[in-house]
Image (tube, rainbow, N blue to C red):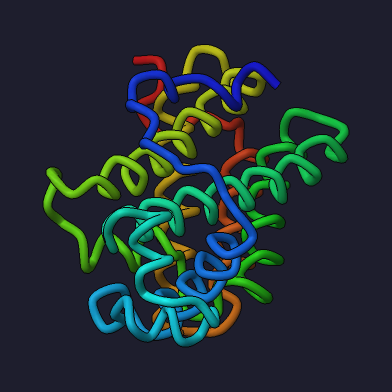
Length: 209
């Protein structure tokens, strides 16, 4: 869908590597460890041991731990977009497509993000814009805003930008509350607020003025 690609070109694509079977095993192990324990807490030795490869193999394939982090985050983002696409394609109306984003996030979080959004968690550890993984993190959130903007334009052409920002705040707030376990069913509540917003005319206060 066209709106899925809006705004993405503003963020340079990260350098990626070709995946050999050994590299794939290493990336799977790194992804699990980074998400469960934190990026800084996991060293190359542990990744190699978990993947059943040598440290030399890791450096030969990835070059650095930083590149492993890039691959982990980019791979996670790709899998999320593929997951989300199924929900968007199944939604019959523009408003249903907006709510489908929240449905997809809820279902993704239940199985794949029990500790919260991987990008938000990574940003807590990587705040240096010079880190090669930083554009992957910020680019993913820019993509989500662009997605909501495209969806909002189908519902409220005049107020699309403001509506998209409000939906993004609800969505990202739901993800953070889910990860911190502040209260149960945070993403369901965020969806409910989005549904009420859309039912009320789809234009937040001040839109179009």
